[in-house]
Length: 68
Image 1: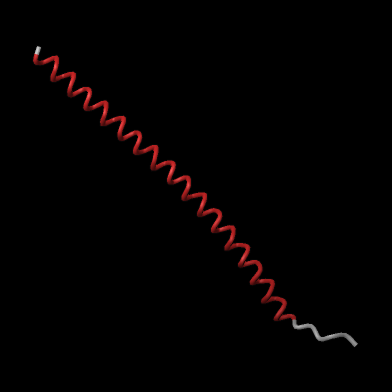
Image 2 (image 1 turned 180 degrees about the vertical axis):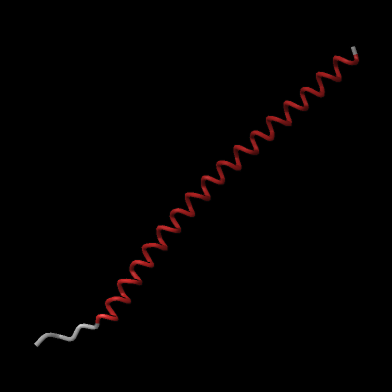
């Protein structure tokens, strides 16, 4: 009358689709985290360059003031 239904096979197929969707979402989140970390790293390097420039200017100013 009706074709036999394999519940185990359907359950496995549904599980595989869920796992694939979760994997795609995980990759999307990891890509977003990597981009955020890149921006943070860039800002840290800019801050370090600014601080080193300030210290170099302070040392140069102190040197020029002490020689006069």
